[in-house]
Image 1 (tube, helix red, strand yellow):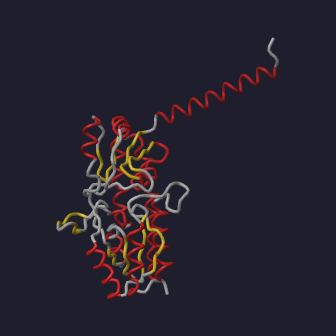
Image 2 (image 1 turned 90 degrees about the vertical axis):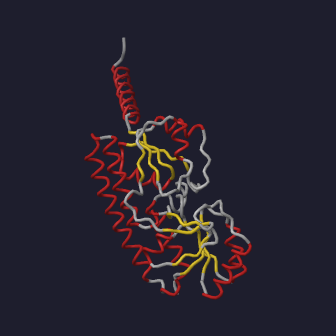
Image 3 (image 1 turned 30 degrees about the horizontal axis):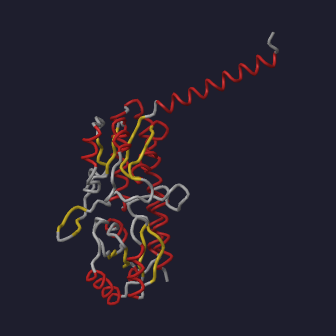
Length: 300
């Protein structure tokens, strides 16, 4: 005959089992979303909250310009209910991957509505895809993601609107922080060298001039004449610092710094977030990290 203790234990175990089962069912019921890279994924998680399960194709510190998709990517795309891409030519491989996967989910271009800047690479002029480097543009991304999630999951419309409003308020606060920090950097000091031309929108928004020995694609290697030209420019214009990037080969920046006399600043995050234990695991932290590194190297 079961004792009172055994009955209570049995009931407790049943309740725990039911709660675990309910949690799994809830997780299984989340909207599966695929984002091409980590910055988009972070924005989507902030807007989607508990209703979405976001996976990325290109991971932390990854380079979306040169990414090579895997069979697992095709499988994940096929199961998605919404696919988020940056657009503006960033993910040259995504259309082929979507076609190969047989994915039927709608594709949302997060940069829709952004006024693209133009940039030159290998003699050609095209759109600069790094629009998220302006916080004003990140707000456009958030609004597009919100609308895409509502279209894919109408029952979550109220939650998506509330989440996006709360996150947009955080972006407003972030922009105030960024502008206050940059105001302390003398305008004459706001010219720097980076290893990859990813900061055009940041420069236009916040009054910086970025000079890069590489163009929009990190596949484009700087030639010896390019490097020599950059070094001459640093010396002629007294550009104070060279900054490394988390997705680029640091040897190029170090060579330019050594030969020009410019100081090496800290790492800037351009096309990808850091791993969770790094200094830029969210979009908010990425922008704070970059402004902090610029300030540390350039303030006098």
